[in-house]
Length: 165
Image 1 (cartoon, rainbow, N blue to C red):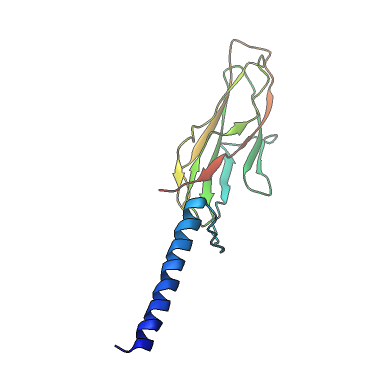
Image 2 (cartoon, helix red, strand yellow; image 1 turned 45 degrees about the vertical axis):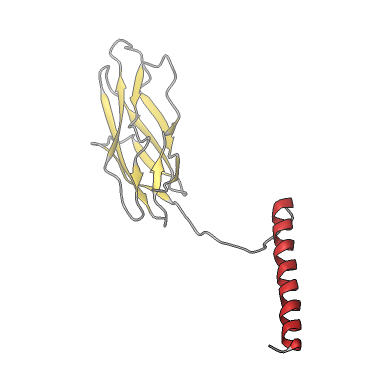
């Protein structure tokens, strides 16, 4: 091997050694930076669909807000012991699976004599493009309160988070 070639290899070796020492030093002192960007496009979009009151009366209503995440309804209870049912489903129109939490609800007044049984959604998984089974809200006039409020207006909003299996 010629003297010039050895000299060239020696210089390259010194640079490689300096580079390794520099990277190790920077890594151990916390001053080594790598810059870059990354993107994640996830979208959970849950919609309340197929909302309905079972055998609706003339003065009853059910609706969903523009964001399709809050159900609002008014039912009319005629007599003590009456029960009204509001049914709905939830559709995941996003591109990420969702896991549901509890509903955020507006309950009736504590002493109104009306009990509301909300469905348990906590932990239910709705995959992208799927629609849940039908859920039912039960509104009941307790017969022990003969002077209960007859018109009951309630709402419920969906709580959820991204589901990462």
